Image (cartoon, rainbow, N blue to C red; front, side, top):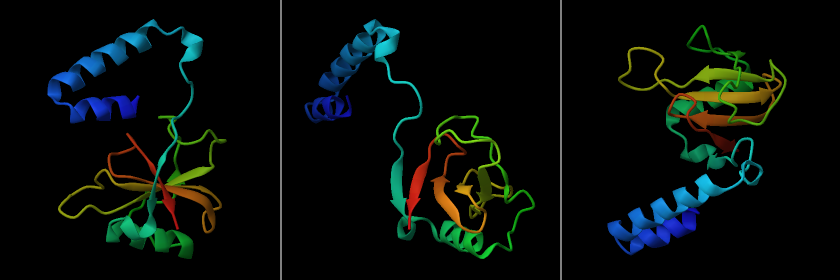
Length: 136
């Protein structure tokens, strides 16, 4: 679907709009069982491509702290169901400081597994609307 929209976009805004309408209509007509269930595959980001503040938080996670915010290390409930399904308590969240923000901002690192040696970590810069798996 993404490839179709990208090709249409190259042909101009009108072609893009028509392709979007056609795809939306096709999806609307699909039987429920044809629509994929569960989280979509997550993009990856290399640790070197993360903001320096995120790299610092990741290093602190591996070192076991110290952390800047009192809520760092709390259980992340995965209520958005974007991350892979796991038992409650598997995921923990950590704040990534956003320069210029007076509060915790929207950036977080979520890690799954053991706190000091997580099995995997994800980065979000839009307060859990999307995640990218951190590739170390």
